[in-house]
Length: 114
Length: 113
Image (cartoon, rainbow over all chains, first blue to last red; front, side):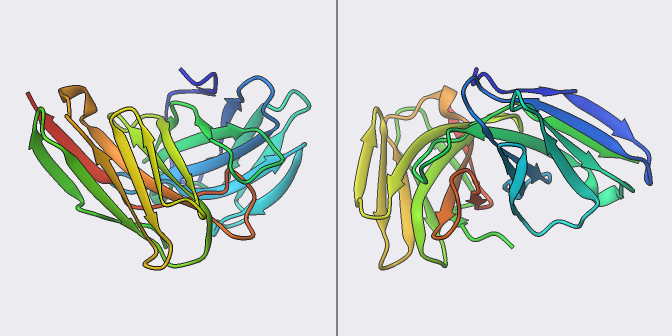
């Protein structure tokens, strides 16, 4: 167990709907990143939040957005869901201030868009 | 697109044998990390090797890094059935903050009892 918790664990949505995924980071970690992992592939970086501000983004459209709260928990919101959004969504927390930092991953939310 | 490319994509060995996985990348890196994933769930950090390091050990794991060839390898010695999982290399590119990782496609390892 890494101390990073994600909810829900599974979710089924209809194309065009909106979804919110949640992540509680490990105690003391104020940096949270979100990743999308399609079946059979490696995770792809979506964006990172540090002190409630987005401070890095991967190659994902604006309908992927996020929030970080004062307690460092985080949300990933996806609007206008598409079938290709079906994937495992992983959140990872880490300590700030150094590049040589280990990322602690949650167990993920498996999203299915039908 | 994914920076890290892993080889082989799948590997099947007998318990007790060694498993070697390779990772290649394209840009300058701060560090390279290896993660394990069981059954499509969360990733577990195995080892981090900095760009100025050449080899690192952790228990039965040995990681090498060759920045001139932009490649790394993960060796698992004396494998066990419990090592069955997918293994991913992830790079932290120069100019990126920690935890903005670029992952490879993974090697699916099966260790037969």
